[in-house]
Image (cartoon, rainbow, N blue to C red; front, side, top):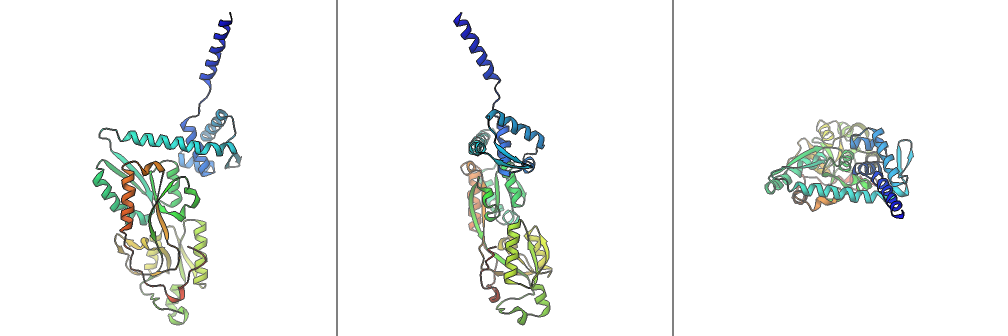
Length: 345
């Protein structure tokens, strides 16, 4: 009789255990995307999901975990103590799954491997072509899906696993890219780009030494903006160095800003690499060195790609190509700008 009761108890326990919900990879990916993007709206965009479906999966995850993972404030999501504990564990699991998927892909007989990457225009135009050429020579079955994107979009694509490698400037991601490995590529100095007819060599006092027409061009700024912090630093630089300037155009591309300078619409600040077309400096402009910190160009990758092929070879060849990159001809800093600003562009 006792044996029969014990058997019944065991059957009930087995039944309860089999019905207990389990944490799924899908739920972990949603949790990770929300934790990294801080709002449901951004996470939904990254994952291509509707917010109600995402909220439902998060609720199921919290029910399975038996703990609240987020403090919800309107559309903002802040990790609880339990959520902060889960995040690195989830990242470890997801990284392992990505490693597994990529590793198994190498055993596909005759299957082509697509390397997905996104980057800013100057790196894609100047450094990437040589790196891809060398990588393809070693891995003939590899092909490449390349997207030109803004830094914020590159980060979103990395977090949502739509790309394997991001090519961008380190200062444009700051702490947001802390979950990825940063592979250093090159230092790219900032320059003042002026129209070809605006000669600032040896100029100490522009108002006294330049014509009214050239002074007007010098005080028309064309500014590139990819984020509020950078915009503020650029504005501070102009306020310190050219206090009489006025903004005549704002651009989302250095290349657009430089072409406006060519047309004598004004001047702009730009990284030297953005002034190149292939190995040649764009015509119709002059470049002047500035005493500002250069931008650090990096490849941003999930850590497992540093060891896997062909990603590891591509990263190595990117570093080699970046080391061979030759700066365009840059003139000395004009005397009236021969000081570092406190803006730190």
